[in-house]
Image (cartoon, rainbow, N blue to C red; front, side):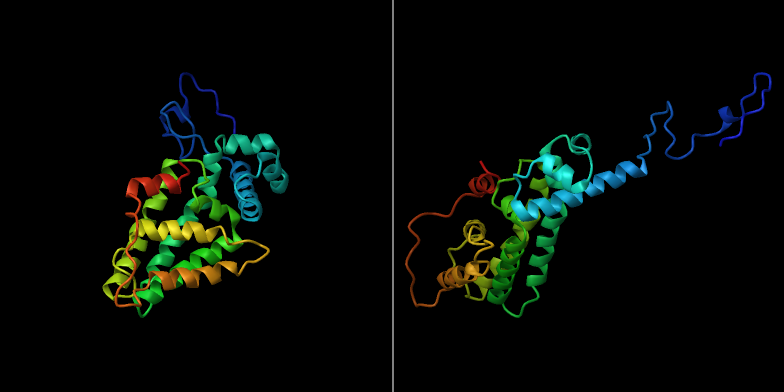
Length: 235
């Protein structure tokens, strides 16, 4: 218990001390976050991560609260907007995908790097329906997620351009094409046939390769970058 300040005429020893760190004062310093609040927040994030992985982004706050063993009001206080919870769960996972793209650059050839990256990103989606929803554009639009995703596009483009320089991918393929193909393949990552995407990835990769002296011209131009961004974010 804090010791009582002795009564001295017009003297307050505390008045000459600077506010302690994390001590809320009139100087506008931030109020400290209680440990139980931080603990409950993490429990909500962990529960949401599990629920999203199992069932996708449509899981309700009631179920998340039950999984976290907290009241549903706690979930709403910590994450008043669903986009806040989605960011808390998936922002770092998008960074993981960026790291995977960087690791793919270490593969011996451009074709091997592109194939390895696509295999890894689709394998992750097999285990995490929420990530599949995020990458398919079914997450709430949020600037933080847009920024996270914007770091992924250049890394994937670098993989593609290397493969094209090595003549492993036909020259008219764009990064937007890769995004669209990945989005399509992600629909084949199901619990009933978790390996089904592998079959169609082989077909896609063979279709990307310029294995003949000439290849069929593509009948339409690639999607514009702005159009692909809208598709990726559900617009």
